Image 1: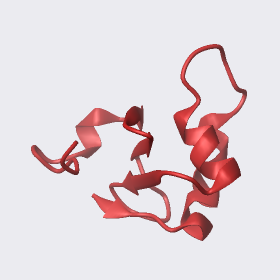
Image 2 (image 1 turned 135 degrees about the vertical axis):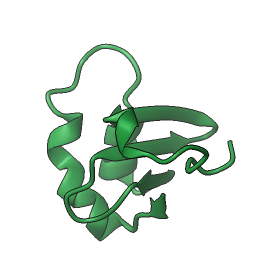
Image 3 (image 1 turned 30 degrees about the horizontal axis):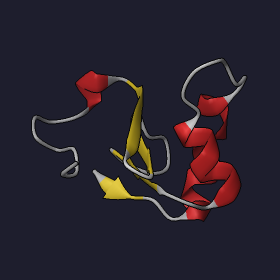
Image 4 (image 1 turned 90 degrees about the vertical axis):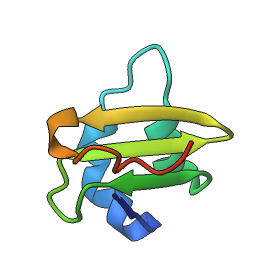
Length: 73
């Protein structure tokens, strides 16, 4: 997975809307710039992992990731 900078994360905006009850880790990273995000590729990513303060949320297709490609948590 690659680390995304804030400009790359904007390409994933549709993945976080509409907001639903529960964890909003990806939305928080997108809207505040705090935290980190990783994707299988950018643009046109198929899998995204977002992290804020030790809280993680996975978005997308887990089959898009090779085994052991997630960053260490």
